[in-house]
Image 1 (cartoon, rainbow, N blue to C red):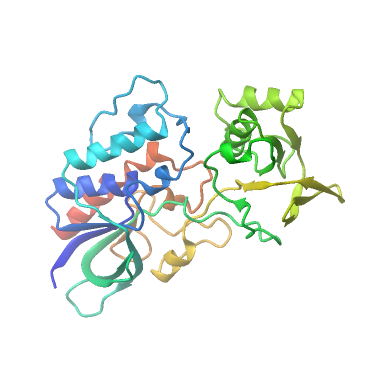
Image 2 (cartoon, rainbow, N blue to C red):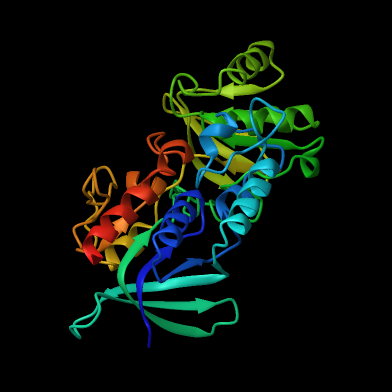
Length: 329
């Protein structure tokens, strides 16, 4: 079996940036993505507008051209497709990585096991591995009764099905604010529930006055300093200052953040801080406590705390590949 120089786990912007650097360095490499290309962006709401400018989403030195100041989700998907075609990057889509284990055969460092959508398994050998799996695939669960009911979702997509229905949006950051506004403008009766006393400080500057004014005028109801304690088929039970209240709910969006796949990281041998969920790594090289195993992108932060975005995570791949080049020289 051929021994690869590098295996990249994850086909988002950070993983693709690493692949571009690997291609340009002449590495023998593989990229495995369990979903579609830039799967997390694909699962963003279809009408989403990025907070940042197109230049800050660029990878591989290829320009992101758009007539807008802020690119849309669809424009970003188109851009990353074109980049991968232009750079002739090979990405194995629909390939899940089940394990990354160190080899003790004296020839290679890692054995990576994969399976495709048909359940077909394969084994790969590589001298180094980069984990660039992001955080968006693993919602931060509340651990309350009813969280797994059919009308409950940790991801917001479309608003049409909630026309003239009662919807509860849990959370107080960008995703919750934008979902609440979109639902309201498409005819839903929306209540925002947030455990803190006010909305998050980093809400997009053009979204904040909109959501605050809608709450102030009563178009969108808001419950602050309030926590959800149970979700039922037609209502959400919340608590404020020890007093419970039932909110009617035909749909519930728990937009409370996302975590890296911490179990996967631990199974790879990476230490994870139990308090911060940050995986152990060198902040300059992104190498973990496992020699030859690196991180790139949002997974570095362990959660979407607003520390690692595409804007800064896109640079990790080049740094990592440069380190690997020195290692393999």
